[in-house]
Image (spheres, rainbow, N blue to C red):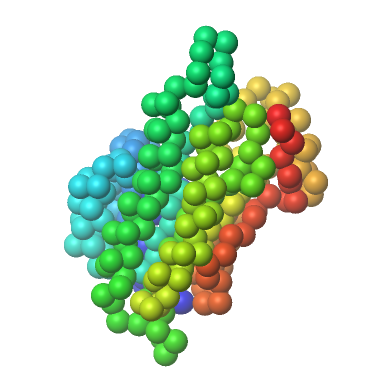
Length: 254
């Protein structure tokens, strides 16, 4: 798909990989609608890229539908949907003071997995009504964000790993489900990325983590995620798969 002139919905666009995608797409001539639970940061990025910033909790069906409808009114229907919204949580199933919090586990699943599906179902419904962009019948592309924790989660990552494994698990069935509409679905599974999630770690911890990546021995950059997302949009044969963006990293148990 040629991206210039298209419209895009990007979640988690107030920082990190979502913001990087917004910048790359806007620079390529895409009309971008940025969704994020942080109203201040998403407004800042939207002003920077000339996009539309929308405060949105993707767990809320009505709020999310309203945000996507507002983006439709301003930019027209989105043919590109990139899901970067997510949270990280760490908690062992048995703690010193008792069992893990069920509410904390549920929150991670609600945001990372159910929230992603919520956005996808709404965007896919809009995309399915559009005219194809080419003779092959393509109407749109949806990209989700998993993690290498979906495959080799560490101690204490049960909730996070489960949420990201769920995203991996629904990639192929959603691609098959939407094939009749000419809508592709792909997932990117990043490794250690230099985003706000890791920014708060002490310098020694960051250096140790970066050194654990086989090559290149550094954190991935949000811009590298965005570059891959754009390639996925432009490459029509990428569908129903998961691409690891991790420098060959395989996480140890802890």
